[in-house]
Amino acid sequence: MKPIIGITTDVTKEDKLFVNSEYVEAVLRAGGLPFIIPVGIEGDVQQVADSLDGLLLTGGNDINPILFNEEPHTHLGEVTPSRDACELPLARYMLTTEKPILGICRGVQILNVAAGGTVYQDLHKQNEEQMLQHAQKAPRSHPSHFVQLEKGSVLEAIAGSERIQVNSFHHQSVKDVAPAFKVTAVASDGIIEAVEGTGEQFVVGVQWHPELLATKADAVSLGLFERFIGACK
Ligand code: MN
Image (cartoon, rainbow, N blue to C red):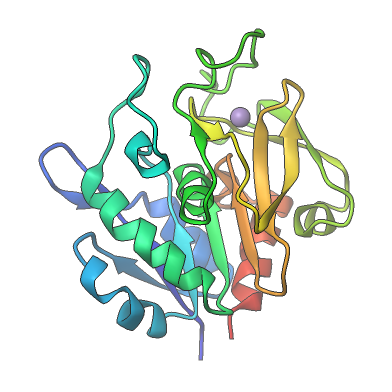
């Protein structure tokens, strides 16, 4: 039996639900059975979580700052309240189980907020220094900036190296790390690029988009999906 992997959906301005096919493809390639989780299931997160073997929190729009007690910054982008309403309790509940969670881009941010952390509403405007180009103009599967991986982390074990190159499509990022998480990847400008859980549960959140690299046969990105799926019973 393949592990059932719940994949959260994005929502358009016209209220259409969609998932970029690379998430589904990466889960399939790594041996999982993808199931799309629509918005609107927030009243039944426990039943949804019980039916899954693992959860993949996908990329998308900005996190509503109200969720971490901040007012909207001038440079806050588009928010998706229906997603926040669904993903926040789902992530919180999944964190109380032993089931694996992989968060990607917005997914690492919502995971961090669900566990009590915060995010930069706009990492460029909320930092004094000149930051890297985190919204790369190169093709989506092109690795642009480097990240330094924490020795002994899940990511470092997968990569077999403490420095890898990743793609980057974000203007928000983890700011205050949730107490239950540790930082396991940092960009050269200090931006947090990955967090992991500190317990036995497989909880990994990355700020980059491994699904776009895994489907281009990038060994580290595919390895991350394989490790995630492999941790699902
Ligand atoms: Mn980045």
